[in-house]
Image: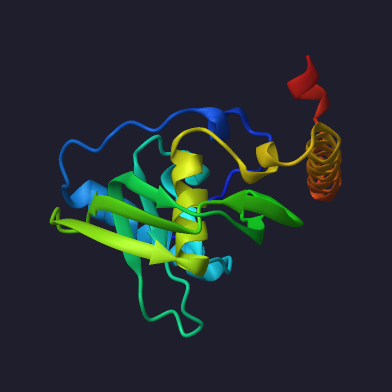
Length: 185
């Protein structure tokens, strides 16, 4: 297994729509395993394949504190939503930012598991929020899009600034190479 790089908002790949998985083969299972390892290492409670640059309709979720109930959703579809609830959300692709988002209180979702078996789940509370949040990623949306334009732009600008600072630090930490006179000629 491997820990994958998580894309940071406003990376354009986060706004692309994921394609359905046609065949669950060893490559897809490895991606699922790597996504789970990445999510746990972050640490997070959910991760969509689009967040690691894979445009496939796959997401992993584990809302337990002891990381004991990994749920894999391949080609998830919401078949029913009920009620409304507001919860504070964060995102591995929007590190350090949290805000309240209104979503359905309960959802019924159908998907395939890691082995390709179809299942249906009724979810409420944190699990319902997480499912909707990750499906949004698969549909090319990030939670900050639910916020006011002012808040969303502020977050975007702060993350762009942070990324530039990290790139500058990395550049400065690179050892400078001396170019010999022969190489310059």
